Length: 208
Image (cartoon, rainbow, N blue to C red; front, side, top):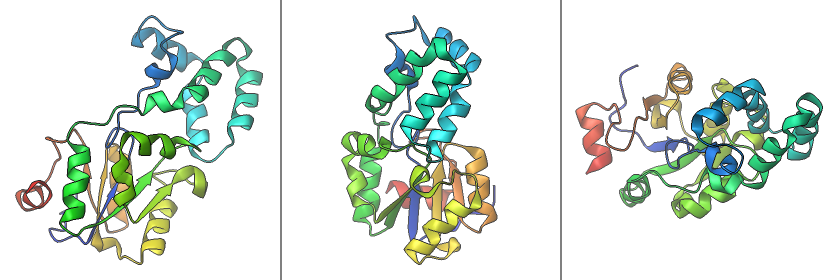
């Protein structure tokens, strides 16, 4: 990854698997004995491709119609995911709420930049109330664009008035981080609150 800006003005967070665990099993556990059984089924019915289109802004109604047409014997799986969406983001990643509060207290401008379907951020806010400390949250479903499309990063820059070099972006997905870097942002791939791949200056900055 490219050299980090050691004096960022703003920090933008992905949400899923950065601030909260994203756990489909918590929405679907009534239908599967364990994670392996669930993952086998989800792969067979193309769940993750379907979910990406939900992140891209397709309505739940339309998504369920498409799922029913393509996988009529598994409609209940898609319905259960929608109905229990709140459960998928019900666990904060330890240490991250405290980090958001610390960074806000240090005067950083905080933002969210997340791939998420309609309604998900409201549920995340229940788990991580610190979202209220963010100046703006860019949600893929609202914009009709998903990371790593560079256009969604440009939405953040346009709405915030920041230059790309002002922003440190944190995401668990390497491709999303690379897309941010190509625009001139600093980016780090999240591996856990104690495992951010940061140089010593940035690590001191974020964890003092």
